[in-house]
Amino acid sequence: MKFKENEKIVLIGDSITDAGRMSDPEQLGDGYFRLIRDYYLAKYPHMNLNFVNKGIGGNRVIDLLHRWEQDVISLNPDWVSISIGINDVWRQLDSPNIDQIYPEQFIAIYSKLLTNLNESTDSKIILMEPTIIEEDIDSKGNQLLIPYVKGVKQLAIEFDAFLIPTHDAFVQYLQSNSSYNLTTDGVHMNSIGNMLMKNTWIEAME
Image (cartoon, rainbow, N blue to C red; front, side):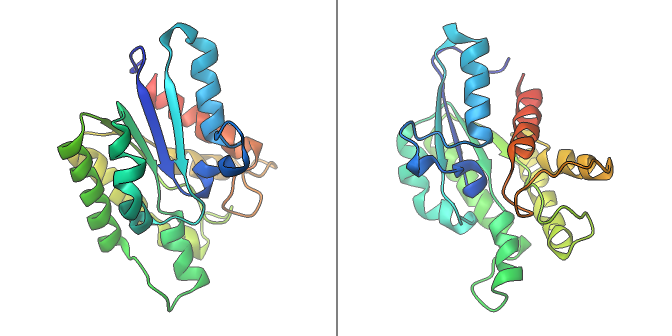
């Protein structure tokens, strides 16, 4: 296992990370974040790991930039796990004429976040691939998502980060032709989707 005793692990992202944390007295939400937190607390109770959920629904990479200092740098975490990109693509489908962030801009802003993290903290970096948009590999959203996923993989190499292959895991699941869905609406996870995210994250970090 890559974590050490008493470390603080911040997971930041959009609604998939948020998963209702704002209305949860524990600020955990009911998504993959809670499953990851519960796994480590149950399996390694002696390690006293501190997991912090900083997901906010609707966030794009530019929104992370605006709250980076307050929600990440000021916490001085030992680890930062980032899951972002779905809304950067979704905005192109939902509001195609408003304030778009295309792959080159996405990568540039993301790189700025990671550079700032390296310069301001000793945090180790975990990058999660964006998952899916619609449970159809050939959907327009999933085709638009491809360069964003490639960008995250590129950044993981550039910044020597741990990569969580969540997109690859979801694509493999869809290719299995399972009769069970992963999402409630093509984007937000049901319990199976959250379990797949949790399993993929932990397999990469154990």
